[in-house]
Length: 258
Image 1 (cartoon, one colour):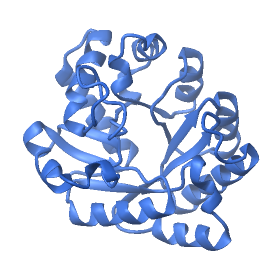
Image 2 (image 1 turned 45 degrees about the vertical axis):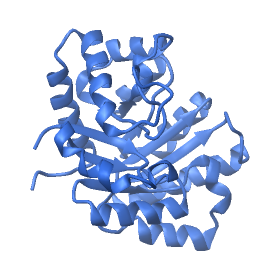
Image 3 (image 1 turned 60 degrees about the horizontal axis):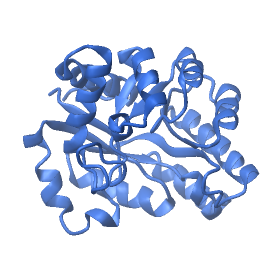
């Protein structure tokens, strides 16, 4: 059942409230075969689980984004731990560090990042990592606290040097619509450098729609433009990109064909 595998979407977002089911019903016809809906808070962990339960080709993650760690305490973390063991929850995420918005203190972000990495280890799940303007701290925590875990550095936004550091540790890099932007020189260099078998296609929808839909609401059907951009950079066919990234995502999320 190979096809496009969107490894990071947010279909529980209010941006999809008017047409969510119709849109998801259209995915198979557009060549999209699997989607992982990424949680970013306690409430989206719950809505993600509900979405995955009712949509056969949608899976979910459980986790709290660095901007939302203020909602975590021992009681809510215990709830998250239970939710993360639910059916069709395939990873802990998206978790990490965000120094761009600086909504939560850096030490608090680090503390809950490490706690959620420990949860991933307890449940033997891979990890979806959010890192924005926190390059060195994210790398240090993953080096020191994520031994034995497999991570997807989602929406990778750093340069080749950092890409190499993550790839050498056996992690994956998530690439989406940004690779189609004219000013995305660093990301294009990373895509050219990295092995295709460590690349994951993602939308981060409703955000970061690729050219020619930049600025519009994003969805998984637009990953064809991302696959074409990656294919052009690497000198291979878009079909090869779709097939390999599907295989990569199945491996990363430990899914098997039914």
